[in-house]
Every structure is written in C-alpha cells, then in structure tokens.
Length: 120
Picture (cartoon, rainbow, N blue to C red):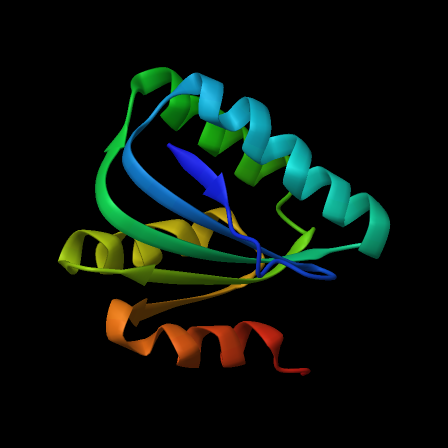
C-alpha cells in the first residue's frame, strides 16, 4: 500500500510504503508525483518503508516505467527504512534516476526530512 503523508508540501511529496505494492497503488502514486512535477518543474520524494515486503510483478514494472519516464524530473529521493533490504533498494535505484538518492534508518526520519528540504 502507498499512502501520501500529510507533511508533503511544495515540491516535496512524501509517502509511506507498507506490505506488498500492487498495480493499483501506482494509480494514485504516479498522478500525485506527476502533479507536483507539473506544478513545480521537479519533485523531491521522501519514502518511509514500514513493514515493506516488495512488489507484485506488475507493480515492479509500473515502478520501473515511472523511473524511466521521470528520470530527470526527480531531484532527490530519501528512503527511510527499517532493515537492510531498504538500504539495498537505495543502491539499486541509483542507476535508474538522475536524482540524489540517500538511505536513512527509521530513527533518522527527522534527518531525512531536513536533507530532502535542504536547498542545494
């Protein structure tokens, strides 16, 4: 499941990812991010992964297509997680985006928010 977090503002859009992501999750995630890109020219994404178990094959394909389509539209991605799987996903994501991608442990959530918001 993908849930947009209320702390999202401006070009920063934040989500909580839980369980197994399905195709239907991208029917809300993708338009939400594309709205921010249309409004601000680019986006910064903060993702909190809580009890995350991966993707269905169709959802993984949706994620891949999103990354290719918006390769240059995302400035930063902060991935906040609970385990090594999410840290590994950060490394895996880097070749598929022009964005700066950084992993934070769940205990560093406030640091992730500060990093995603900092001006460069």
